[in-house]
Image (cartoon, rainbow, N blue to C red; front, side):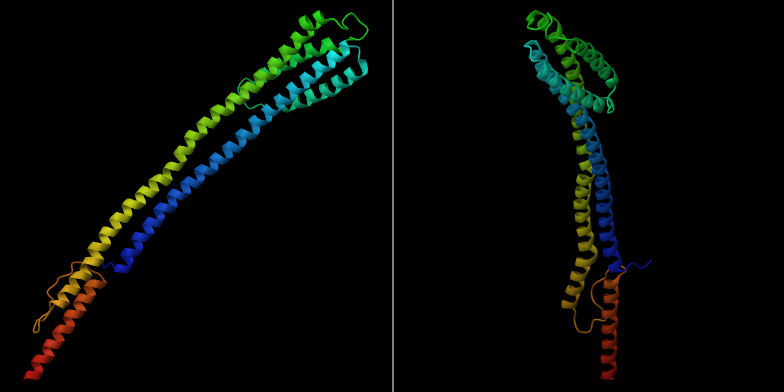
Length: 258
């Protein structure tokens, strides 16, 4: 089958483009998957971490409210406790409805249980009771329950932070794998370019050089060029055309001599 020079070069470059396109498509798909994974990971874990921080802030405000009650500041202390309680439950609901890790539900139950016990202690009257100004009661009872509740919340926060760290480390490894098709395609393109250059030199540059040298070395009376192009393309066609022309010239010259 006759393969034209144009077809050979076109096919070579199309193969190179196809290799790069396939590698690029694979890399794009990998990075899109990574992007979606990172987005979901950050959104879910960050939401739980932020909810945990808000719960801790609410607990600390409640602790301040309790201290105000112990000082006899009933109205201000109760207002702080009421607002902090609403804030705590709002953040708690966010965490409760955003379960992303194994056994995270058990952490939520621990928080709920610890907070219920803690809240039952400051819901009862403090002002004008033996608890007002009672540092021993605060230290041995209410503060210990505050610490237990805060620890339960911090454990939930640590769970999500550790999960985020582990997932990010895993995503780093996956991102390296996502880059590999691009690296492979670049290496393949370089290798293919070297091979393509070799074949262009062999089947295009060298034959033209041989043909040009044969024309330079042509001697009067020769019926054809002293060259034989092995390929079956436009260069071979050019060689045949030149030889035909030379043969006609020789024939015409011989005819004119007669």
